[in-house]
Length: 288
Length: 258
Ligand SMILES: Nc1ncnc2c1ncn2[C@@H]1O[C@H](COP(=O)(O)OP(=O)(O)OP(=O)(O)O)[C@@H](O)[C@H]1O
Ligand SMILES: [Mg+2]
Image 1 (cartoon, each protein chain N blue to C red):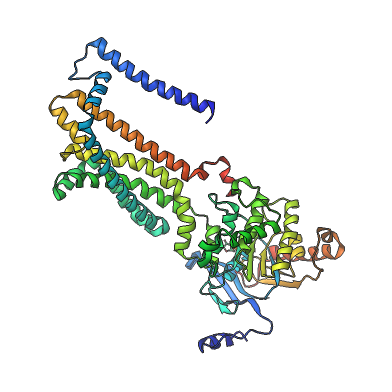
Image 2 (tube, each protein chain N blue to C red):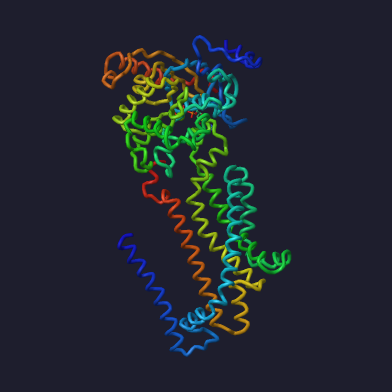
């Protein structure tokens, strides 16, 4: 099905929407950083297919290539071999305008939170051409609506140094969502936060996802976090990584922190844990 | 402004007054000749009397300084941006820049005079060539320190290099830039006066040269006072601008965000 895509684009015809739209597809994608004897294989022949609107969590031992998959999906890295298709195209041009957030919130210290959050609107069309006209009215309301949704009402006019780490991370989520991206790529967004703030932000992220329904790919080290948020969890082997397990998470939504202590949930966590412990100890197949 | 700030300012002022008083006393007690070291009171009187004569020269020096400074800033920002954006350019161009900057600028004045004759042009060029280097270095450093994560976020949005430069790179260099402006304006001023003393018939530098060849020592010192006053004024103006524009960089808790 995907092989048809280049042909239809070539003939200039509009690409028909597939029955089950695929947001991200990695086929046999591998990535090697560097060349010659200093080459580091980061990812080996990975297959991954994420449907539109899915929430997928990616877990695995440290250094296995999780961030690399994220960078592939965002077009920041090209696959060394294999194909990466995002939103129906090979990621060559970063035409997709995905929202990204990292562990480090990187708010610009010379701008208020509100203006930091509006930064993507300065870059992404069609907002970009309207930015001068609307930044004081519509865009600002948009930013403040998001801020309210993450519990930062009234903090828009503060500067980043006036906010705590958890608050900055909420603002970071807002910045990733302001331009209504169809896809959200999160790399350990809550890694630096304490347990309670983290749990609070899980609920917020779940709400955001349920209202905006973007496709989310979340990299995390926290198995509870993965099971709480995701509708599907992919487990990766040690470097060079491959996906060794891919299972759906069927708990009903909205999920609550209390649910994470129920037997089913704990059992899932235990299962994931075993996978990762195995992945850590056994070198991946085909690794050199 | 806090009380300790005020106290410190008062001490600074007292020290300046003390300096002039000590100088005056020294001249009076040793019976120092006017031709060697005039009394400051005498210098101030000369300054007051000769001010109408000095005024056009002050304007001349200020004009050449400012023109050289503005051109130097443009050149410095441009070069700094080019060098700062690309690591390769940074590594390649740095040795040349360092080599250029370590040439004593007195040595280039005769060359400028040779090319452009004496007058305003060599003064402007000397000012320019002295003042652009700190700007290049600061802009390049500021640009080279952009967080890679933020760059990724913006690139994933489809931002071009220019977008990133404009929205993140350049604003981030502002504290560096204004800090360098403060230094650069002083350098430009030194360069302009230097060139005037060697080759010009206008400007404060030239007034001082002429006065010294006429043994009009109080006038030489009056010129010196003018130079000191202008230098301080320019420095203060650019410090104030710096404080207003880049207040965010001096917040103590700035680093929380990073
Ligand atoms: N730019 C790069 N140049 C060279 N090697 C790299 C580069 N980026 C990543 N790597 C290597 O690729 C491997 C996978 O990196 P990646 O960042 O994807 O791991 P990760 O799964 O996100 O790890 P962690 O959980 O610790 O964040 C690592 O071994 C790393 O050393
Ligand atoms: Mg990582």
